Amino acid sequence: MIKVVLKKGEGRTISSGGLWVFDNEIDYIDGTYTNGEIVEVLSFKDDYIGYGYINDNSKIRIRILSRNKQDIIDKAFFKNRIEKALQYRIDVLDDISSCRIVFSDSDLLPGLIIDKFEDILVFEIDTLGIDVRKQTLVESCLEVFNEKDIEIKGIYERSDARVRELEGLERINACLYGEFDTDIMIDENGVKMLVDIASGQKTGHFLDQKENHFAIRNICKNKKVLDCCTHTGGFALSAAKVASKVIGIDYSQLAINQAIKNSELNNFDNTEFIVSDVFDYLINAQKNKEIFDVIILDPPAFTKSKNSVKNATKGYKDINLRAMTLIKDGGYLVTCSCSEYIDRDLFLQIIHSASKDAHKRLKLVESRSQNKDHPIMLGNNISSYLKCFIFQVNDR
Image (tube, rainbow, N blue to C red; front, side, top):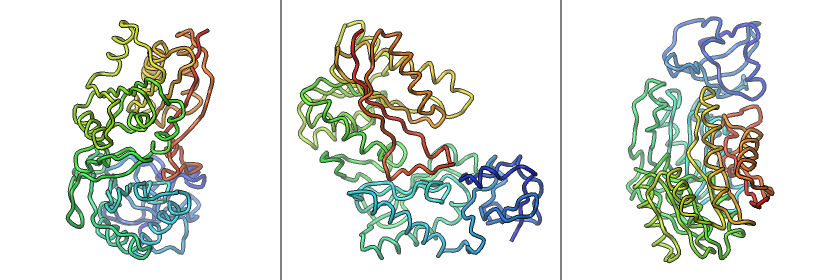
């Protein structure tokens, strides 16, 4: 096996739980290799660190798969990883009908995401080392689910993220196994939703907010609710189960069309969905002196790199400040950030700063995170990305 030796002082992040080896951490490589091949990573003292797959096309040169020197990286290895990931979900979730089965680094399968929507699996593959083992992973999944007596009728691949280009890969949107309709009906907390796995964002539905969608219902009872960046209606439709009126806003016509379909599936007559830039909508609502009992903010990540954190901070402050001015005294703000570069403390600081400028006092009702099927691995900061706070908003 090809040996990759790290520079002195490198490799500490791996011993702390990280799985990445960057190109500038490598001292030398002993032998020739093919991109995607499994290599052995050693410290500068030649101490074993782990096995991982290598790719010269990526700044993340190696992604570690195992730190156990006895492991053999074959089909049995991947099948065992998937079985452990599935068993974790069975153990910690009340319902696995629709959930994330594999969460990349957190399940020690870097570069692979598998979401389950009823009896269909959706793969998202972001790295060459996983891509070249795709068929092995498909076969392993089918075997593991069959052994657990869980029916899987099909597997779809939504590997169309731009990050694949950094790995030297083409984008893929295609069926891998079975024949099925790519519009899949799921039940989320008693709400029927259609998931478009072929055309929707990511794998078709944001499963990481499932528990947070349910958590807002108490504060939305008989209330007027505004859901900003509603996407296909996750928060809005959960609120509609109990609210008097719900307005959902999103810039995407495709997402709004889906949200309307989902509302009709549930026979809701208290929802309205509007295509609009959220900032424009909030500005106009402020001019028209509209007031809401509850406002939900779940925008896309305002930053995907450390370099743009300053601008993202301004964006998060602005959207939260504008929302607070539209909330009645004693109403509620549900605010989220899905950027790994805006940590929990910084996000709270941003919201606090916005509240001072809006002349509002905030009472923290609940601090939440991503679903348990999106586990946070200590030592791996990128696995902890979703922040969700519920505040009561009071006039000063």
